[in-house]
Image 1 (cartoon, one colour):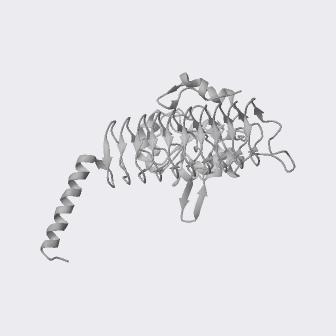
Image 2 (cartoon, one colour; image 1 turned 30 degrees about the horizontal axis):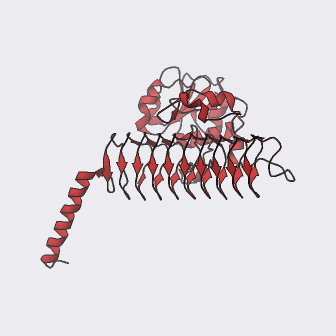
Image 3 (cartoon, rainbow, N blue to C red; image 1 turned 90 degrees about the horizontal axis):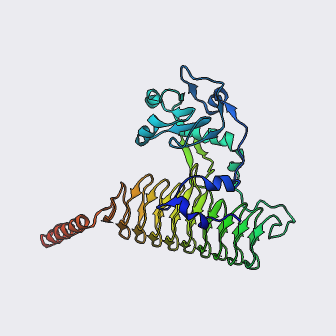
Length: 369
């Protein structure tokens, strides 16, 4: 059976290397037939820039960094202009302000809201991703689907549901009322607690998911606009390496295009929210009520205190510590200790608190309001 854990050599610092699971796992979503670039431009409401070939076939939607021939990508954030310059995509959805930055050989699809165009392109190429999936079973089929591959020694308690084509390794316990979704893979010696649900996920060995954990649901992605908020299909997955433990009622959203990744040995407390495309390194410790916004990254051995959180698209360096109820809004250097909102180096934050205390005490002695 397919297992994440035995492929450890394919990982570095909690981040997947290569594409071994793409070869071994059939995926969770079906892609529609390729579409001509000109037709795609019409569907998303974009204008083809001069020189673009409308007959080019578009097979898939990818990020700037991952896109290649036959892929369309997008940019709506100046932060990624360097990636735009090196993308190998066949086409790129781009705002007029960045249209001249699109490199030679990449067709520009120019529109005022490229993120909205990205959402529409995904909806067209992945129509089945618009409807949530769970066990993918039919009415009347048994709770443990006959296509599921379950090794000897797996314990499945009453009320658990094992979906179509799921795989579970020996020594794993699936507790009462848990759901293992369509094509989910769980390694050996693990535990999925009561009421937990696992969909769109590849999970390694000795992973513990406590009661009520939710893995693999849609990431929070919407192209917002004055006419309403357009849903962005989430076609990525969740990949959890060996020896991870996730506390009760925590949630891990699947990725939009790339995977949400939790590295080997990481420990996560109760009531933690991990957004789509987040990459968490090895042996991190994340306390209760933490919120990690989408597309952010924690390197190895990061510690986040209770009720802390971080904005999206930033990186917390290896071994850094984020104090309880603290919230970094920019990248954090390796080994740094941060506190406050917005988070500052711990010594600077302590000085500010001390100064504020002295000022308020002085104001009190002077009789001010």
